[in-house]
Picture 1 (cartoon, helix red, strand yellow):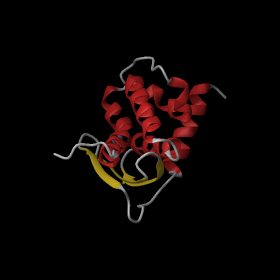
Picture 2 (cartoon, helix red, strand yellow):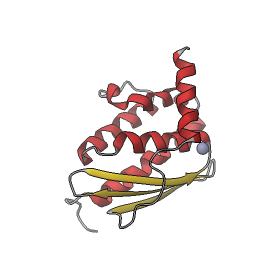
Picture 3 (cartoon, helix red, strand yellow):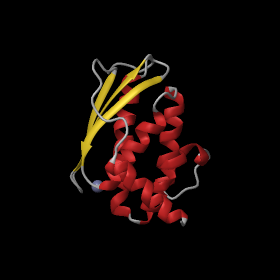
Picture 4 (cartoon, protein in one colour):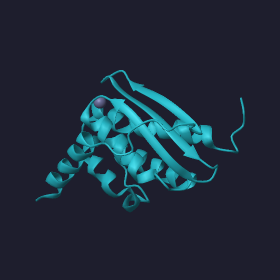
Length: 147
Ligand code: ZN
């Protein structure tokens, strides 16, 4: 099996059997993001003690790339520290910009989405779940200044 085929299978698997599905009771923060170009939606809830991303769960619908990416993000970031989750977010963003991220190896299965960057219209789909994560992280940050 070629790497492309392997990545294709991974994407399909996450789309058909999304990880970390649902909505956490009593979450530390939640976000809801929408991609009007494609109709993708992701609602994400996270639980954090201010240092760790203890748990996260999402619901959503839309194209396979948006849902598979959110599933991969959730699986990868669960149990990481908030700082590590931010590092992963930055690495994924830079990957989607066509750069070679410093911490590329940390992305693991998420690298299956690398091919998406050739299709500029779909990059927004791939980033959607991560955008939801970013909003949740901002809300969960204990050092955040209130507006
Ligand atoms: Zn989409």
